[in-house]
Length: 113
Length: 110
Image: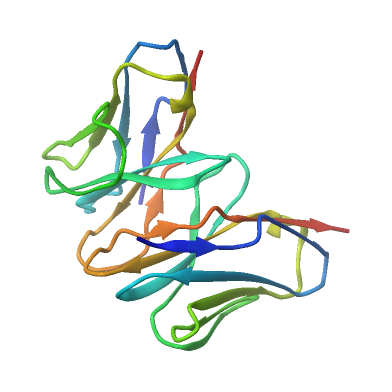
């Protein structure tokens, strides 16, 4: 079956702009989690959506937001971009019912100039 | 909160054995994951340990000691393609969301 798909793969923005990233999970998976990956901090959890509801949230400012649609596809938005937001944003899907393997997409690499 | 420590970088020789350690401090430990991430690619699942002991899966084995807050990933018969970052992640409390360590970059040389 098809894996997790993230778009766009690469993007460049300037400070103050906003960005929307998209994630299509594996068919049948209802949970989508978002992570920020940087060389200094590693993988940091942003939020998780399950059946269109935010179920868990990490310690990121309110500029970072997300949503999930009825088909389980998810988007995350970052407003008022800062230089420090430059990172690889990874989406992971799972069944969401109990602990288990996360299936990651290849990520969206955001560069903020 | 959770604290997960693993070495930043390790090097090893093709054909050898390498052990990547991970220590963690958390309350309400549920389980520990290992993921592999090649440069520029998505992390992929390697193992999940809930109980103490060693679990073997081909060339890769993962060990867990809950009382010591310690795990290791053992890679045997190293191949060049094993050069990657290895991520240790822990779930705790009632959450299924894993907290990741910063990863260990393994370099395998001929």
